[in-house]
Image (cartoon, rainbow, N blue to C red; front, top):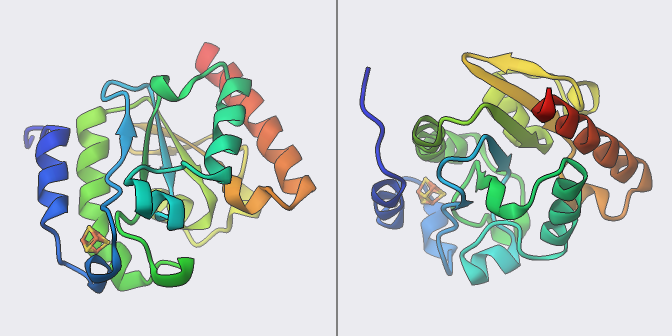
Amino acid sequence: MKGQIPLEELQAQAQQCRACPLWEGRTNLVFGVGNPHARVLIVGEAPGKNEDEQGEPFVGAAGKNLNALLELAGLVREDVYIANVLKCRPPGNRDPQPLEIEACTPFLREQTRTISPDFIVTLGNFATKFILKTDRGITGLHGRLQQAGRFKVFPVYHPAAAIYDRSKQAALEEDFRTLGKLLGA
Ligand code: SF4
């Protein structure tokens, strides 16, 4: 089995990456942040405006919501590692394109191998479809524990999508409470 690549080395590689056109528009690469030995890896979609400016995932309103949700699972940001499917911001926050996902996900794959979490929490459709290799949407999958190889995968709605949608927010809160129980089991 291939050895694990240290996160710093992967980040340095990503910093040089020009494998898709998104590098041209980025202010900062958003590689990922958190506990390198986390039991829980959180996977989002792509950097937004605030993330691109600050070089960190989930720093705006969606980040605040994520922090509150983590608390419902008995977690704080320092417990988890947070990364996105794409490391550079798509213009105008449009959806990731298939070629961008193909070009960028080797980084996420290696991050996952290095961190080696017990649980991967996928936020929204893009992360869920990539990790589970499924066409099923998040509406039918959220809050249901799945397995991908040796990882337990727990899909939930994206916290940004739930900010203005009370039913999604309620589902997210319920799902993070469930996650807390699964972590304690
Ligand atoms: S989005 Fe990913 S693949 Fe595209 S340039 Fe950025 S790091 Fe490279």
